Image (cartoon, rainbow, N blue to C red):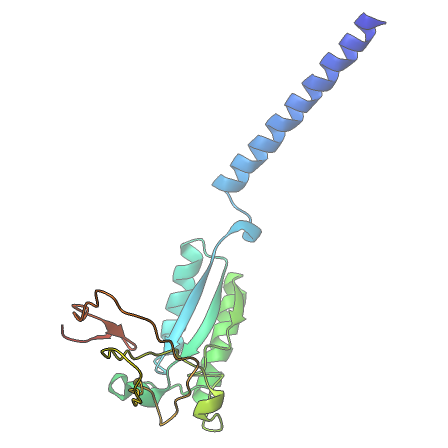
Length: 196
């Protein structure tokens, strides 16, 4: 009986090892020759309406050659925000829809998948009907340092856009050992550095 069980246990272990080896080989094969399910996607930004049919074809072919399976298209920044770039495809205009037609035809011919991102408020999700109060928000701050005791003060209003500002919170705490040095540089959108 013991030898009989030992034989079945050995066969079972052999089967497990063979299956494990096949699974490992499949993993290696998927890594070396990934199917579309395992290939990466990328973000594809269209800024300032600067997009042409030639540019669409060139970008999509380059994605395909790089092994990218698909792209999330994000049209951001209006043509008026980058007038110096002379963009001609303002979001949702006839020219933009023509470029979109090219996108889908070329992507289909290359077997690339596409998603269109609603973007983040300054392109498709925004518009003149969106008031500053309803738009994307940015948390800003200002600090005020005072010396001792109770007193009535006016707090500085932080930098804000289009006349809209709303307090979230005010914090007061003792600032022992206060350091009044400012950072040597800071970055503000759209990527303009302030001087120290």
